[in-house]
Image (cartoon, rainbow, N blue to C red):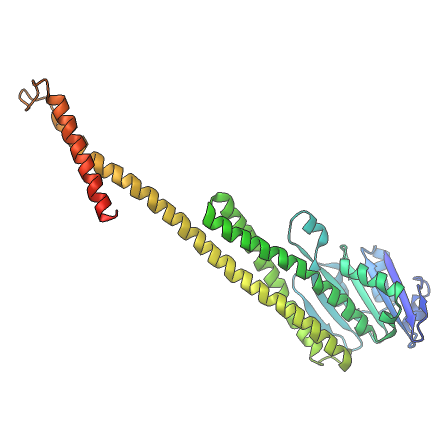
Length: 321
């Protein structure tokens, strides 16, 4: 599906069809936004037939690009950024998908195979308020990227809550489920870190004035988005350090519990050792054993065993063992 919106410099909003798209693309007095949403093969052909994009850029569009990137093709910029997959979040899974952006002199092309909340949100706002499209296309690109980055914030809050809950659970009653949660959360944080860090560099480049396709005024707007993404990146690093500390705390708590168990078992085994020795001696098959024929022999042996056990317990307690 293709969504096309065009706005003239005077503020006249239009929704061209594919048939007259070339006319609007060549019009220098209007800004046109073409959004490829799960396009068909016939619609994908427009990237080369009308826009004349480089085959390598089109190839990247059709495949999944694991890391954000930016390429300068002279007349246009090709940018790949990653957004949070809202559908995966509903399944309590962390997943990102890539958004391909072509920034030209008077047009913006977005290409994605999954649902993007940021793209849909900005498109609906553009239809209601044409001023978003009246400026240069890089301002429209800023709106899309800014909304995409803002969608990271609720996820970061959720990750922070999960980290806090796990820390409390570790010191309360850690078990195998706690360890599984730790590993799953650590995997999500490392995955997010792998996406956010290079994406932060993309925003830094866009705000540095390095590319001629980005006007000076718009670089200031991208600088603001960069600041937001930098904060998200720092939060990711903080969560990574916290989860590593939580992992060490879990191992320490489990080790302490194991030491307590071993300590109790050692006390019992140590107390039973002399008792076993006494019962073993009286169980030997000799003709003469002291108190063997006495009617008080059994009680005397049990008394000695009890005295030894009580004495050892008193000794251990005094030593603080």
